Length: 435
Image (tube, rainbow, N blue to C red; front, side, top):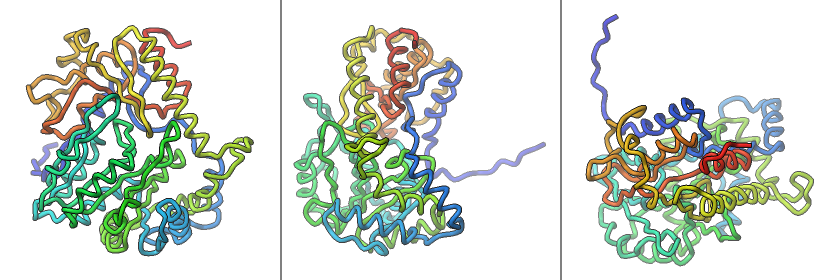
């Protein structure tokens, strides 16, 4: 059958290609995957029970576009306490099909596609931001993180230089993916002070890991710094909060003029979010912080999740730094689903064939380093997939395709897969068989 050639518009690069490559070869080589941020922990039983109950109660049809009144009221109550202000549930809260869709809707709502408006992002960062920037027809501008004494930091002067009269949105990610960095209060104050010279910039704060901090670290909401609530829209993930990422429920809160603009776009795209899941989460939010989870009177569900993730983080960092036959170094994360591993010293040991084509697709825009070579971190990940049967992600993918700051001496490992699977992965990385 003859197919007609159709010219399709180019709205966004094919950023899925490398991810799909690693998924395919991970299956081929029967790998343990530390690539994706899908948690190995199941949602709490009280959420599952609430979902079943909500379905039986008849919450199966379309629901209010901005979110179920039951859920937005609960969100306003809980997050109002966190950001220390009263939140109007009907005008300052919106529920969407996961944080991902909300972020995209926010950019579509706030960026004028004909004005070359700019979005400022700290790099390295979650690659999906680049897709959202492209599809909103914004101009991308980045500020680099640099590792200083084991801590990811930015230069306030570099940040200031990235801003201009075309700057429209500052996209913050706290805790930051892939580095696991938490912004300190001092850093947020520096950002806020600089933004006073650019009063028209809107802040989009992606805070999906706000509950998952380690070592007693403090989580700071940017909306609580100075008067920034009035120009900040903060995004959260019910899926990550409850370890139910496939349910695709997220929410955002901010001043009503921003939330209303987002609601218009979200209505056009999805016309509402999963009804029974919203009701289930509205019934379950308060239970996240109630003592007695798993019969332990001293621990809440969120405390349990935090302790399990930190347990995996500590185990992986220790084993990588002390018991590897390869000279690699793990960096501790402050929060989130991932750790970074420095591969600088092992790069000379990477077999040459992993810097060339074999099972892999190389002809992708933005894949190569500025000097035209295959990134070292991509070659290292290929090596580990084939010879150690462990999948991880190269850090060079976490930069915009033509970024001036792209580096290729780190890889990202997920710590969200559960302790047993993490042990299996580490033993494989150590060249041992899993017992």
